[in-house]
Amino acid sequence: MIQLTRHATISCSLLLGACALAICGSEVSAQNSAHPDAKPVLPENPYLSYRDPWRWDVRSQLFLSSGYILADNPDTPGLSHNETVISTRWTPREIELVFPVVREGSFYWSPNKEVEVSIRFDDVNVGKDVKYLELGVDYPVAENNAPIQQKFVDGTFAEYTHWKSGDIRGDYRQLHLKHDSHIVSADTVFNDKLARELPWPDAWAPEANAYLTPIVETVGAPVAPDAEETIDTLVKFWIGEDTDPKSGPQLDVVKFLTGKVIEYITVRGQATEYSARSTAGGFAWKDYDNNRPSTVVSANTWGGFIARPADVIAREPQGSRFDLATLLTSVLRSVGVPARTVICVNELEDDPLLNAVAMVEFAMHDPERDLTFWVPIDVDRVRLTGGRSSQYQRKWIYFGSHDELSHMIPIAYYIHPPARYEAYHLPLLYGIRSAGEGRLPEYMIQGLLVDPIVTPATGRDRPRREE
Image 1: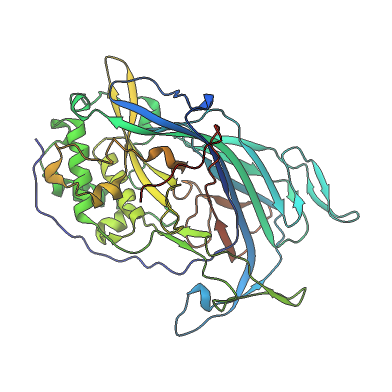
Image 2: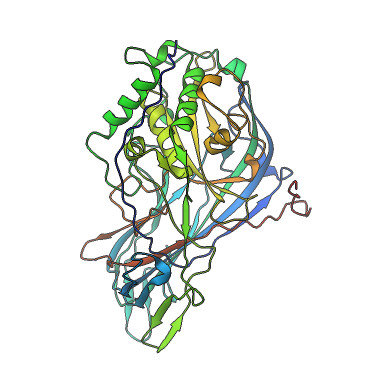
């Protein structure tokens, strides 16, 4: 049995600086449940059923603009709206770029495997079929340009669009990635009573086993050598030093630990940062070549996600909604439950600081059917509706069952790619690194915007939100 123990606080600090931001655009269109692609392709099971599926065509656009900070306000250093930034040019040479693709999980599936990608430097396209481009007369841009490929992160089933360039010559200000993929998401109904009867498996299927490690993932920050030990210590404090977590039903363990994480973390502050840079806000982005200032970012642009490694959250349990999901993912992995963080766009939320959602999904296994399936946890909504560790045997809304998931659009399994890729100051799903003789700029403004545009297949108006 799970032992209920007292609450503990482990303290340390993590300093987060200000974010470097940039412009971008993104588009999402949807077709409702009448569309033939909206039919579920996930294996049928008696534990999780799907309602009202919607098909989404997701267009993501990432902009990276090179520059450097000319001046900052010494009284409030690091605040983007106080900075004077100078536009610079950058010679890319050889680079690698990755961007996530989501295929199949607890409430979503991919209707096809198509991914359309275009990459541009300033006004020059570098497409997957382009072998040689010229800007002006006899000015080579890309030579023997490598194709865009779909790859998987080593040891996982997390898919990424990967592009390694050829030798890109010339100087440019901005890299623009346009990435189109397709997903269906659906509301879920979870049978808690039946799922509670499922035993712990002797071994997990490969697609689930891949999400048992690492216990503590990078979110664009270094992971301490004792990070896993920190999570293990916290979990043992909650369940009891000598208690085997597998001595109780898996579902009870997951719900109990979800409640403990909710009780442990004080959620405050925003989870997403967007650009405050605008001419009205005092930002000056100066284009000295053309002797003019310019505004480069809309107020709705994502500039990065405010997240920390799970061991840091365990020591300093005050943080964002993303921290809540990050810690829960690590806690579940620590007791042997495959879990992953799923970054989604909530199409029903207008506020761009709130429409980025970090959910958690965990695996369960039915040995009679030889079936592994994922269960969604909207952990922040569970927190807001009162889910607590002492109530782990009760049915929780937003745990398994969720009537708004058809408008949650999953876009990534990681806040930052789990490899040696970089983002600029805050993680933002993508990753970039130099290859060969290339060097990345020391300062780049980054931006990503996902702005859902709903166009149902039947021609009906967008569903009204309940007031």
